[in-house]
Image 1 (cartoon, rainbow, N blue to C red):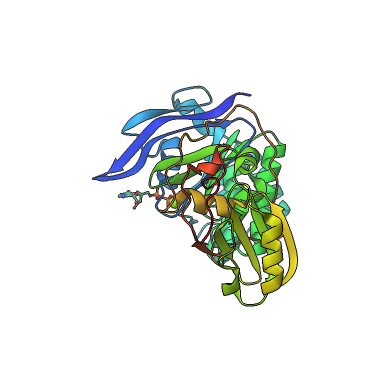
Image 2: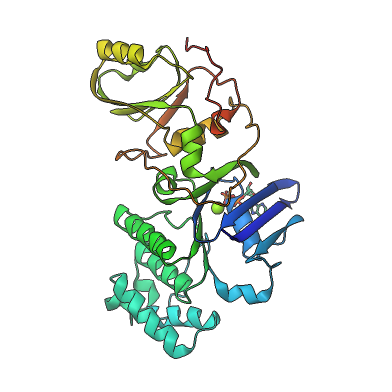
Length: 356
Ligand SMILES: Nc1ncnc2c1ncn2[C@@H]1O[C@H](COP(=O)(O)OP(=O)(O)O)[C@@H](O)[C@H]1O
Ligand SMILES: [Mg+2]
């Protein structure tokens, strides 16, 4: 499979702040690729360099196999992080205008704008001015403007931020539709649940550095397992379980991170003695858990981050439960002592290590 984009040892500093530090990645054509990381990680800076808005201090970016030629411009669609519309323009006019900037004729741009407005349930707003739109509607309009010219590569900076669940669902469908149509989609987010559901590949960035990347399915497969429980009772009783290195407790649902070779039967028996356990499963870790393991200050640096194999791997959705970064509290019980580590075939903690 060819790559739509290659990021080659790119660095970018603002004054003495190194926003992106020697970052490399390959984005396979036809994939959904998530740039993940906490606020300030360097996602937007990386995206702006991809879009040629910022120039790297060192390193390079190869788009469609070329070195940023201007002709690539119409083959990409870009939703910036700072979203805003020309308030006094009518929505269909505004969308068509963006389409024309990307090389469409006025007639084609207008026809597609009306068709997409209909698809997004916004036909009634076609002749309304943009300042009448809600935030969710405005974001949908901007997404329409981003994809109107049917670009091969769509880059969306925080497309889900601030949206209600219905609109999150809609944007997710848009991204999946783009993939079905053979397009490549890169999006940034700090919300792991969105990435978990749709990404083929992810790159985790922290403090400007790549912590890991690769096919999501294989990253999860090689990470050490977790126990997921649905419980009722005093959450403090979740502590001091043998072989559990960390707890992500969401109140009624918890994810317990395990050392290699943890005795899960023993853990289950202890849990049942302490709490009402409504469900118990041994599973691959959620992306939230992988994220925390990778970037938590008590975690050693990963050894060698994955390099993206040129192969799309289907990923696995963990479970129906939604792991919200906002609502989940994470607690490290016993710092992991081997490479995350975990993420590259090695299980999370040193074999034999036990929780206190
Ligand atoms: N134009 C700029 N001037 C100075 N610092 C910046 C600028 N843009 C980004 N930064 C800094 O670079 C770091 C990475 O920012 P950014 O790429 O926006 O992160 P993210 O999108 O992952 O939240 C942050 O510390 C941010 O404050
Ligand atoms: Mg950003």
